[in-house]
Image (tube, rainbow, N blue to C red; front, side):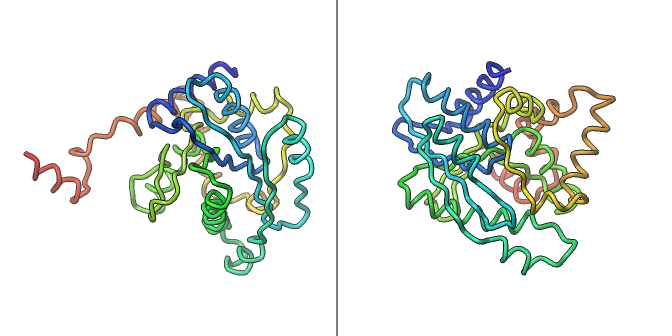
Length: 250
């Protein structure tokens, strides 16, 4: 299990040039299975990699009622990780700005991302690693198609608009199911999210349920969709800018 996940992480690092010599990587650790797995796998990769890089685990306490980062902090200390626990009360902003019954995830993620950008500079980090995986990318693709009218998923490597920050997603080839098994085997002390977890009808959960129903009949569906994200034929889409750009090079 860990061997396969490390293979997927290594492939993503190589395919998208995610880690370079001398990098200091801020690893965003929410306390969920994915971010724990990200940190653990990157640490194993760090010890084996031919290039030198450092990791800084950062947990952002967003002020959610009942949130207790103590089990995560204890785990980080016990396993020798350089880490920071930072408290920023974005919870009050989210519940104030988003009407009751609407999904908090988008605003919550934007606020968290902005804080992580700032913290990366503050802590001298060259990159920010997030725990998005294969299933996140596929679900985002469907969400954008169905509800945003665009073809877009989650990039493995993203440079911020101002060019100051680089976000990497080393788990982009990893299946969520494999990460869940890995997290269970390592007995990570999972911290619940009381914010988005309180919204059972979120659109992302609907996409997850749709994929699960379809994959019951087509077992390799998610892996095929991941392959499709790396096999784009622009000439067979309807993006006029891409069409005009291609036409200008003929």
